Image (cartoon, rainbow over all chains, first blue to last red; front, side, top):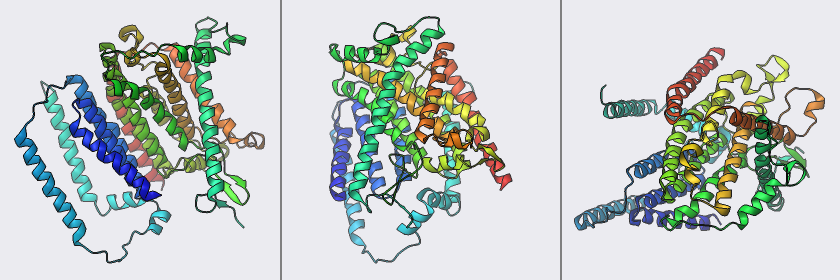
Length: 167
Length: 355
């Protein structure tokens, strides 16, 4: 049952991913991307990570894609960017093939040892998914978290400087 | 034997049956409220402006929503030739569905005991309930933006662009105000948030329940304002703004598609009222710990709170003029966002001090 559902969602994800690059109108591409993000959120739910799913929909589908749509609509990008760039297709195709082989290699390389880590299904059930993520993020991974926040602050200041004529 | 929570694993048949029943009841109640909210709004605003509102169809116009529905149903469905077809057809559905999906996590009563099982009076209790609501509130933007863009009309496009900018700005403040609530509750599940609000007020006054509106009055006010802006109600109905944009994003729509936009507006209103009631006004719990009040079933209290908030929204519509677009943006970024941030910081400090 679950595997059938997985295949269904995977099919939708792949088809909408394909539409992102094949649609002629940029708005339709953006919609395809939203759909892909939503399918990824469903995968997170199926992997028992509801927090990740909610954040995925909230941040990517709900905020970032709306901004992208906003820009597309504001600039009113038409379908004129339809010239084919052969060298672009060739190089990007080669690059994606290399990445695909890389991923397959990494998946096939290891063997499942069966060793159990600290966080099992039982701990997730009893402590809670959000609590576990929060605890690790603010203790073990505090430094990366703070670095990311400083990075975002720099980006905000940069955006303000770029947008404002007289600072 | 202590009763077990009914789930798919311990009694699949009963679980599916009860789930379908709950879905049916919640959906039909929501749609009924949607239909009669339109009548209510016209009556309320009518009386506030010393008019009568609808009077002709049925007793005091009670059949007006049905007449309106029939009229819209039989109208010609026009798709402009220059419109982009697929997004144009999808947009009305994409605005209604997120609104209706959100109702799934609203609890409407205590657990029921039935044949050795506990049945929660809620369609599903997610342990990320609050985030789920925020996520789907974010998806609601697409309907408006797409409707605006795909109609291929400048009024619609302006409405869509306004909607996306407005909702992005106010979503941020709405999220931050909710953070202050679950800093107190320490859980994201709406069921547990309601349960926590049934305790004594600040642990001392056993007569008044611990509703978060008493502990977080600022967050309550901010959430109502940002909620109104999120669902494009007056005074924040810039995407529609009939005095300048004809009818904004739904200018080119007709027939049932237009009706869907209309239904979505009221469905969104119900959702925002239900979330406000659940997060700040104790959800389905009674306002005072008196036996006679707590005996009234939970869904009555929840519906009463929803109706009170919806009446408040209608009152606002009859009272306030529409804000200008630059005022709207200034208020969102320079007033509401700093207030919401300050509220989070102060709540954090107080929680740490009291521990």
